[in-house]
Length: 306
Image (cartoon, rainbow, N blue to C red; front, side):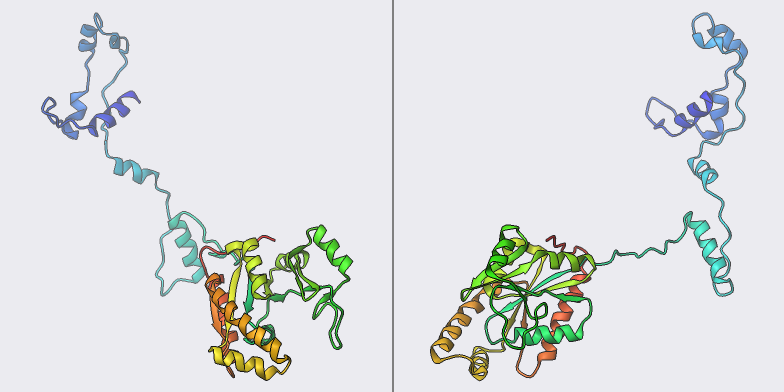
């Protein structure tokens, strides 16, 4: 064993130094064969003479490539691809590669997303969300909790969760709301438990909020959520839509238009902007869907924790 290691070490060190004449592998056997008479002579001065049983080496090969080949596992010959049975070919390939092929997905399932959809008045947020609900499965549209009274035709649990002000404030104290605000004397908020429940089932979450709500959610969720800003194709189109609703007085209409002008300036704080052009609602919905698909195809995905 000692001579095997010594031989291998010497044959692969840099012996081509000016002080060391080169030794070929062929002469290595004779170069390091020690006779009994030599050991007797060395015994007076060298402890190595004690090992009188040292014999001549068998022929050695000091090649790492041959040693590597000896360790290589035997493989099944790979049959002709055009003639072999698939299962036979798979077994041969696995044997040659040294491991079995895995049936596990190459990429893990994408994480559930949180989409925050916002925009100024008159851009058609509700219309886009309604069409998106019809066009795509696997989305949960969060139902907001409100303290205002139920209006005719509204359904509890579908349009809003209607609670008293005392119940709403109790939810605030228990930290059960992701975000809330006082709007025209009534409270509105987003329940955390509803989001957690549906994300746990693998649903993507859609939140429809105003600009102020989106700003608050950006502070809470940071870059873990997707913020989408809806706009009309022009300011004139936005104003015409507000006029056509015929739900505002002249004074109220003026306030809404002035507010909408300011709100459009917040687009820089969003991740995406989607134009909801008149008569092209389906196009806007397809763009929102493409955003979802692109986010799910990212290597580094957003991971929202609520």
